[in-house]
Image 1 (cartoon, rainbow, N blue to C red):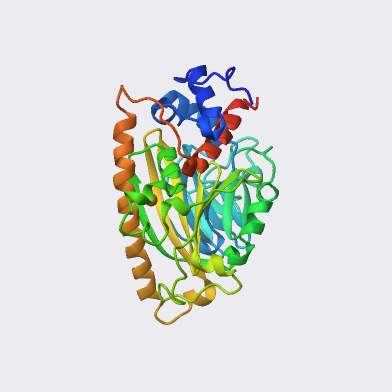
Image 2 (cartoon, protein in one colour):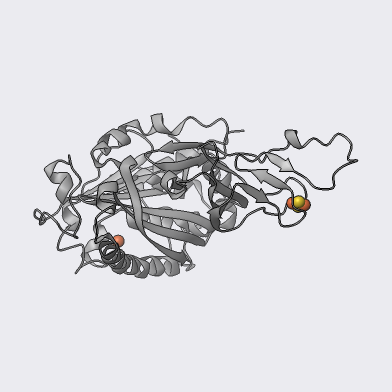
Length: 383
Ligand code: FES
Ligand SMILES: [Fe+2]
């Protein structure tokens, strides 16, 4: 791939060729890649609006009429299970004069706009528009809230703003096969932590995807169990990266009070795997559970993060599960606060005028893989 011809706000051809060099010679992204608002707009146009993004789990809307509101790249949306049982992601902006018709989450069979009470069914169909008699050519039946393309993949609701995007599942077939033993589709969220963080989204993804920092940031937590030097990052056969962190020794059978997932290989029971499906779908796997870091970029320098802890349905039905969920949440919080410290430091440094590109360690191969994908995605203007 030639990047010399790629023109991106704030980035020189020389900087880009350092990023696209083979890993042994590669450098990090230039600081502008994290801080330049114009470049962020280009990312939104060429990456975020063209990629499959996870916005929820189907199990979060189990009953007809269940809904969760959120906003993605200025578009107010809601994840809804229709009275027909189907899960949809649709605009929640009223077709009359653009007021959002719902906020928060709950259960409704009808969404009534708070402004002039136009009412929509759970599939987005307008069913009632009061006092519109005498409006020429107005037909309620032809009014339906726009729906985003969505796919349910392993229980995750994936959306794509691009109607022409290739379907998600075939693109990540090799990933799905590699993790099929964990049976993600059968898992449910038992604990969620939330954070607002003042960093560019790539700062968090990069931190998630390398174990090099275990030697300093997690030296008393992860490093004694998953030493940085043993971490491995294989070639990826698709738009993703996998960081394999072998455990120094086999764990006890029941490390966090949860049963091991049935059907795992021995190494899968013991080791920790951190993965990213590009651009920012972060999933980690361990012998008992999975963890989903749900990133929602808010601006070039801000993101919202939900850390969800998932276990198999059979584990979620254990009588003492609430206590286990609290314990898991406390541990995730300790680890994430260590990472917050790291990301805060990086963010302060990235904004400093004398900061330039740095060299990548072979242990940071995932960052290099993400950078190559990022350059490729930004090269496609798609118009
Ligand atoms: S804006 Fe929704 S009914 Fe008027
Ligand atoms: Fe970390």
